[in-house]
Amino acid sequence: MHALISGAGIAGPVLAYWLHRHGWQVTVVEKAAGLRTGDGGHAVDLFGPAVDVIERMGLLPRVTAARTANDTITLFRTGRDPISLATADLAGGISGRHVEIMRGTLAGMLHDATRDDVDYRFETVIEKLDGARAVLSDGSTVEADLVAGADGLHSRVRALTFGPEADHRRFLGAYLAVYTLPDVLGTGPTVAAFTAPDLAATVYPTLTPGLSRALFLVRTPEDLPLDRRGPDQLTRLVGDGLGPRVSAILEHAAGAGDFYLDDISQIRMDSWSRGPVTLVGDAGYGPGPAVGGGTSLAAAAAYVLAAELRDVTAGDIPTALHLYEQALAGPVRHSRRIGPKVLGAIVPRSRLQVWTTAQAMRLIPRLPGPARRRLTSFGGGPAAMLDGLVLR
Image (tube, rainbow, N blue to C red; front, top):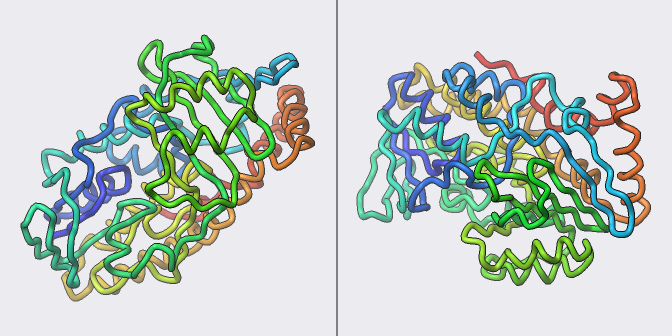
């Protein structure tokens, strides 16, 4: 059996690893020239079952050793004293089993675990699909038994199989921007946070001394076309709303080699499989970028898919994909509620909510454990999404 996977981020390599373990031949195509490993990307969370998947792959010691060490978060406010809080207190209600790691670090580990057994083809995309027969951009044709789109929000596999993105995308009214810059704030290992109505920004240390990563969340009804998502658009959207310290951070956006700006949207589909083609992670479902849980859902879903495909023949694949969708139905329904809820909590809509957030940060360390966990659980959001998922 031969699987063709589009996307070498998180879900793609996890699926490739387990399919190879089950005896499949696996080809992975990736449009990028190479992986953005190490400090690449932003910090992502692994919750519950996703941690179990990483552990079953034998990677948990490495992942735990490489976790982010952002132990303190400080909220900076113009004209007022900053408020500091231990990140353990802030994350106390999210999950009992939780690891935060840089996305590039995790992607590098997953690639290391699969590169000797999987045919990776970088700078290559699927140009045409006829069932599981794929014509690739390098001129070759792959006769696969299964095609899996693990290629993110703007999935090419989804477009080729299910039609235009606009038919399935729900824009949540916000944008995410991420890029690397020098530690211009001088905050070192502390996560620096800034909020204003419809704006939130954090600056946190990377694995490289002296370098930081800036992450912006901007709420706006404006739906920017893909060709207008550069540093100038971020500067326009943020303006001077977060104060002079953030304006200094924005000055480094234009020179950042890894600048990224994208919409926070969900893909909503009644079914994300058709014949021998299926979708995994943000390509077919998920809470949306930067709102928590998307990486965990993608990793756990890749494992579930591989489990359903373990002993199939070509004629059994549609049935296996149906069982995969059934197993994910609950978490996917839950994921659709998470994006708006988390955005509402971390990107304030008013000055009153900005003030309330600051007061909550003062209050959290003084609360007893159960109350603190309840307040920081986001209503049972990202971690609870996977609570009912059973990994075979």
